[in-house]
Amino acid sequence: PAKEKKQEKEEEEEEEEEASYRGLLEWLRPKLSRVKNSLYRVVEIHQGDCILFSSRKYRGITDHSSNLRKELDRTYYKSFFHKQIMSFRSVVVRFELAGVGAADDAFPLSEVPLSSRVRGIGFYAVTAFAAIILFVLMVVAHPFVLLLDRHRRKVQHFVAKIWATITISPFFRVEFEGLENLPAPDTPAVYVSNHQSFLDIYTLLTLGITFKFISKTSIFLYPVIGWAMFLLGTIPLKRMDSRSQLECLKRCMDLVNKGASVFFFPEGTRSKDGKLGVFKKGAFSIASKTGAPVVPITLIGTGKIMPPGLEGIVNSGSVKVIIHKPIEGDNPEILCDEARRRIADALVMQS
Image (cartoon, rainbow, N blue to C red; front, side, top):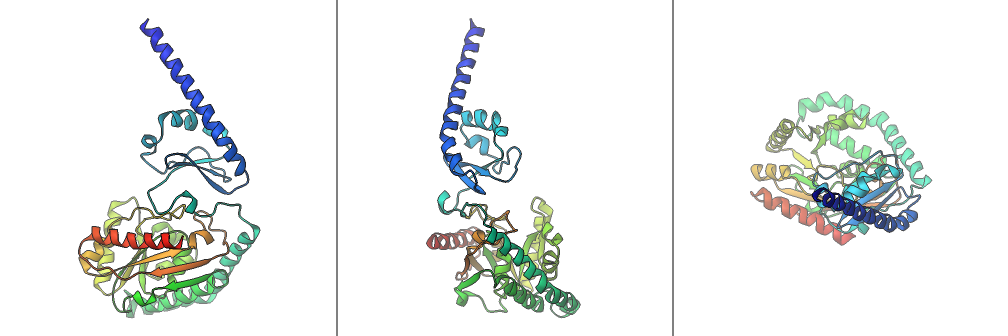
């Protein structure tokens, strides 16, 4: 009798799972029909957990949250993600991080027009054309820069500003707000910003500030662009290597103490949907220990023009750069919270 009872219970659970699965498919079917030819579309399934249907040929699941299994309803996870994942042409599962705005405030999810692809080709063509003269100039000047201005590298940054301006000017306009909030040129500072797109670096270079970016090591392998970042003194970082992280922070502190500025994307990576992620504390620890001010910067629009993962396209649009007033203090937690709040408020106001 106990065995039969257990079997009956298992059968009931299977029926419940199947019923939930059928109900889920009925709920999804009309939504899928509306996004048939879209490049991206987010469908909310359960309290902020989303399924991202994409025309790109993914196989299986990419899980961006270690706690996704705990957060998702057990029945949905078992019946849908395990049994039927391969029935869809391409599915990526994503867990929404706490951030600014709602799902509707994310990057526009539509099919890429031909004009965006053409602009993308033009963008890299202009970059390559400018590199013929400007990158060569950076290479020639590099020995003299190392000898006379090793830490700040003003000449290299001046050339990079011209390069970035020439590259982006034909494709989108950049509007600056709060330029009066920038510290004096000779004042070392820790700059932080939200991170939406590959275009963020181009946009920030047009400011002409001699700060050192912190970048993943793979960026240095990019032809011309990666090499130029090396000449600018960009600090390499292996994200999952604790020794590399400590070395990066040590090098940043040394640069600030010697009069140079550093630039961090404290989210650690580009936002996939335009929402502001959690800030890491490294930049603010450096500021608190060196006494350098933190200068928050909000970037608006770069993710819509060149969405993350679609570096081959350039959509039409404009970019706004908001420079907030410097923040000073010796508590990294307070510095981090205040910097994130200012950037988040600006994102909400602009949306």
